[in-house]
Length: 283
Image 1 (tube, rainbow, N blue to C red):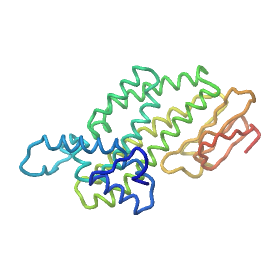
Image 2 (cartoon, rainbow, N blue to C red):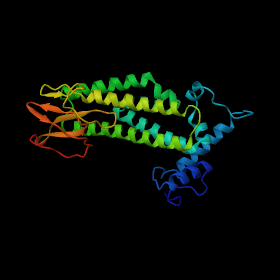
Image 3 (cartoon, one colour):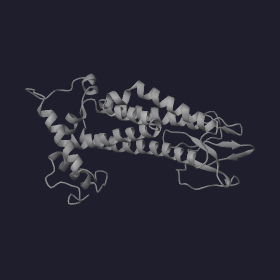
Image 4 (cartoon, one colour):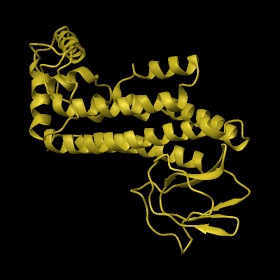
């Protein structure tokens, strides 16, 4: 990170400096945008909004309900390093919303409106979860009916799996940041739990989508004795036929259960999407 880069500001706020110093001390590039003019403007807006709230003393967040209705700005001004990691996590969620629910103008507008919700109101929103289910059911129908196939299907699934990976990375970063920067504070564990639950909900919805109906494929279950291994807490295996020039099957992402295609049993340890193709005779 270099504060002298083009597009940065010459006099960053104290919040920007503390975030920069924290990540720089860890030789991390996860805050390489913190000295941008965008973050300067954002921090100044938070400061101006805070100055408009007249209070004789700092507000004590003594209940979860108070945190649930808390705007992001006050959190950032008081705990900028932890709040920055929270911001990154929220935007991993927003990016995933766009992938799942933003495939039409109306969908994009809906996703954009979700960003206006207070962070923990957003994370627990039943309305958003329901919209995810509707969008994924449409996608599942398109896949099973072969409306979406070939390279378009491949790219769509790659986007979904990238969304899962982005959420997982953001959650890990958030847990590490909170452990260091909010250690011992009230409701920290609850905050992390709420984020983790929202991540799990979205991972599970993607897993349910990818358990596609296929007359030629049977998927292993929890009771299968031959099943071994997991990928974190997310067990999933998908082997999808794609109608390209060559008739091949592609491993999009494997999580160690087994799958049978006809009489051929496939077993594979965790495979992240790599874009590699495998002949149907490969094991």
